[in-house]
Amino acid sequence: MTGRWGAGIPPNVNLDTPSAARMYDYYLGGAHNFAVDREAAERAIAALPATVAGARTNRAFLQRAVRFLVGAGIRQFIDLGSGIPTSGNVHEVAQGIDPGARVAYVDLDAVAVAHGQAVLDGNDLTAFIHADLRDVSSVLDAPELRKVIDFAEPIGLLTVAVLHFVPDSDGLADIMARYRDALPPGSYLALSHMSMTGQPKEFLERFKAVYRNTANPVVLRSRAEITALFGDLDPVEPGIVTLPLWRPDGISYFTEAPERFPGFAGVARKSG
Ligand SMILES: C[S@@+](CC[C@H](N)C(=O)[O-])C[C@H]1O[C@@H](n2cnc3c(N)ncnc32)[C@H](O)[C@@H]1O
Image (cartoon, protein in one colour):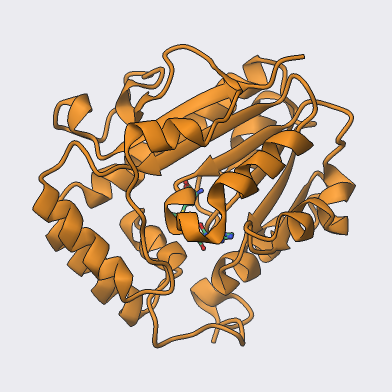
């Protein structure tokens, strides 16, 4: 098969179970999804009508956060749960400001990895690593990551719309502590996460039920639980807020009051 799949569908793709990466690709209008993903995505949209605007709002937060971080002097990024490449990827935004910016993408989804590696082929300042972020050493010690990331310099660690796929029982608090510890002083963590607030509870429960039948069940957390994921890093202004309220730039996809957005985001600095 050619076209959107280039050299073909990667061999290890499960075509029977929807995946969060491919459903998110569908919300964003991408072409790297299958019928099983589109059906689940339509069920998620029916459950929570804010889903498509939510995905676009999240992507826009990611891009604002990267621009902020380049402005703060960050020139290298680790993007955990980066998703299937789409327009406005981290390296495009960062290299648009400084062509020397470096990015290591990490995802466990086979389609994200195959497409990511194809898109980045020949770009020596980037790498796409197939890993599970819960296995912290396999991410941080990956030779491909070490080729583009220098742990002697501040890093922008991005965990955008991914930690709600990691339950507490997988040791999320410890996982995040290990990532924060590995960051050199002057590094930043940018994070967004779906919450259990903003939208009617029954919408959110139905949305969760759709994801229960995918490869990536969703965990909705409170603002306090999401804030705790930053540990002792110092949040920059305006703190941990709903996504539309984080340093808005006038482009808005979410048409309801910003407080009704079902997710929180922030960017925090490691002192030093
Ligand atoms: C909703 S997408 C977000 C993509 C991108 N970060 C963004 O915000 O635009 C979530 C991504 O996280 C990935 N993911 C989920 N659990 C993961 C894990 N344990 N390790 C690595 N990636 C994971 C999924 O495969 C998917 O591509």
